Image 1 (tube, rainbow, N blue to C red):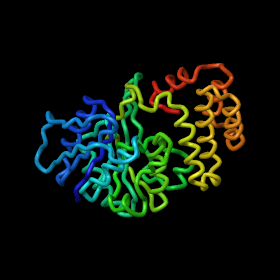
Image 2 (tube, rainbow, N blue to C red):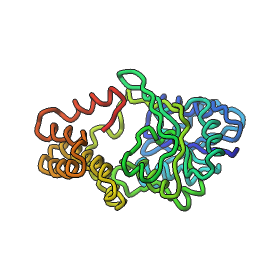
Image 3 (cartoon, rainbow, N blue to C red):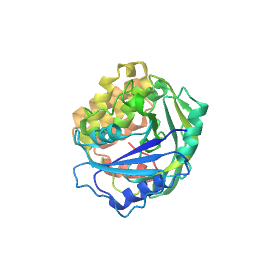
Image 4 (tube, rainbow, N blue to C red):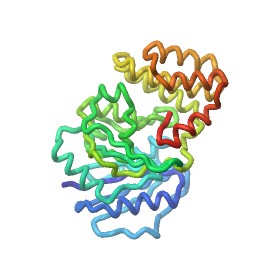
Amino acid sequence: MTGVSVVIATIGRPQMLRDAVRAILAQDFPDAVEIVVVFDGIAIDELADVQIPPNRSLQVMLNSRTEGLAGGRNTGILSAREAVIGFCDDDDFWDPHKLARQLKLWSLQPDAIAISAGIRIQSEAGSTDRVPPYLTSFNDFLDSRVTAIHPSTMLFRREDLLGRIGLVDEALPGSYGEDYDLLLRASRYGHVAAVQSPLVTVRWDRPSFFAGKWHNIAVGLTYILRKFPEFETSPKGISRIAAQVAFSYAALGERRTALRWVRSALRRNPRQLRAYGALAVATGAVPAQTLLNAVNRWGRGL
């Protein structure tokens, strides 16, 4: 096995952050685990009340790059010292067996570009387990975001993030979709393998920092469509993203733009449900937040 550095970018959820850090420190993984917490736009919290067990370490620092999640993660990646790098959002927490099980899978799938695992979504309706496919390819990611492959589950080789994959894209507007962009770039070099069990709890029973930031969502997804011309080979994938963009513009009240994106989505896939949701919002049949709250309660997103 090899050591793991875990990057947590935060803009201020002190108790949840401590839950995340303590869960990582409590891993039953025998090798070194380093946690790098990057504070973005807020003062450093030294986390002095967190006890550090043997063979574990904790760094805290300010984001020294572009403001936002992408810059925060890159600050952590560049400061990390171990050969494997993982991410954890500051409001999620890991099962104690996560790293051991994922590194065991990597030994069985040495050609995998990255390793994921299932998630347990904690929402107002209760808990929902979601497990991704055992292997996910670039073409799979074009067709679907595969939302069960959550950033808080991911492990990458440090040399890949500093080399052929590259760092998190800081040019993404508002850092929206930075995890999807990274998965698309990574899976050009190999599949993503996943442990077939939920090993990360994802909290959806709290406000999201992306909630209501419809402009960032619209321009971020449009940026990804332009960045990956391969989407033109996936009517299912381009329809999905066009519908998400349509929904965002509908939520902003930009009806004409929303309807243009709805038409684009339905032309490629007449069964794309998000497009009909966007149409309902654009025509005033239902408020965007009402529809979003309904799907979020069942562990679904836009």
